[in-house]
Amino acid sequence: MKIPTLKGADISRRDFLRSGAAVATATLAPGVTLMAFGGSEAHAAADADKRWGLLIDANKCDADCDACVSACSKENGWAGEGNPETDPQWIRKITMQNTSTGREVTMPMMCQHCEEPPCVDVCPTGASFKRVDGIVLVDKHTCIGCRYCMMACPFDARSFVHEPVINQKSHAPRGQGTVESCTLCVHRIDKGGRPACVEACEATGHEAIIFGDLRDPESDISKRLAQYPSVALRPDLDLNPGVRYTNL
Amino acid sequence: MTLFIRLALLFAFSFGAGSLAAQERSSLLPDIPAASGEPHAEGNEYWRRNHMDLMKHDRDSTLRDGDREIAASLKGCFDCHAAKDDAGQVVTYESEQHFCRACHDYVAVKVDCFMCHRSTPDGVDEHALQAAILPKKPLDSTDVQGVIAYLNQTESKPTEAGE
Image 1 (cartoon, chains in turn cyan, blue):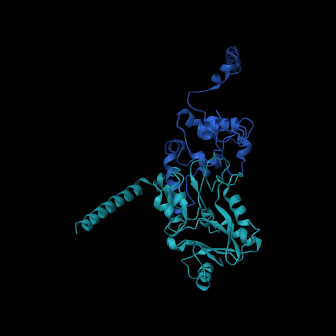
Image 2: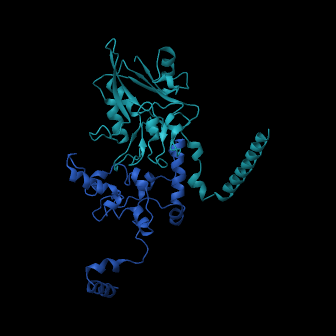
Image 3: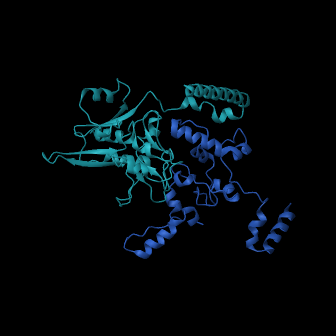
């Protein structure tokens, strides 16, 4: 019974301090800090009312096409050097075959942006995190390169940067000793855009990847999910990924 | 005035080319590369003292909250602070002439920003600028001596390897 009381007292004290700090900022701010910090809250693009996701139609995915992979590589400035063991793989094409019927499907595989991401659970520094809009990212400022997240990920979606990197894209910093993965092109989403792989797939005419807000029942992706059967990969793990597949 | 320059030149040459550079310096403080664009409204002193806190605050806003309209970003720095070498070529952090290194070398503070961030404005080909500085990978993995040499080079970060 005492715990809630203590908690309440703590919160009210914190609120008091916060209100004091706000007044201090307001009186000190004009001309000094207001310009540097002012309004950054208002610009925050990560919206807790949204959950970004992808719907991938394996039937529409062409086995000979890798437009999504090359578009991602170009957009985010990563490239393989012919060494599959250490090459970065933000997105890759995989082929699955049903052993009894012989039916083959290919599909792109990337970070599934889970609602319950195991990579975030295991990260010892808090570098692996989920934004309020469901995008799972690595904060390379705090990543120590321990690679627990790579082991925890059931989708093998993350890679480790083994070599020194230069000439990065300014919107996609990446460097030696840190883990990286698909960011869902968060820099584009924050400006109202769509991921590079989605646009590239559309440009080839396949339209196998659809991007949208899973929380918005009126979005194209939500309507299709409501209308047609789809699956989450590894549903047994109950991770509720933001990336869904149809016609597997 | 002319007499003064002549005397100065005479003085400089009498000590040989090695001391010429030393004679040109006006103070012991670092030579900060000139910037383009509008000066900081808060003044240079404010930014020299606070740039790391401002950038750290805003990097978290961008990464965690998706705020892309921040006041202090590395990308924003290089809009004005892309230092150039004597040939007029933009330099990377590998070069001692890089804007950040002017002061950071002086106070012996090593920054890790450029392990992940590019140290030049977008559009500059850093590969071409640094081809001579980064260690070269052996083409053949059976070339044991080559692999050992490469590993020895990469043991230290490219910044040190370039010096």
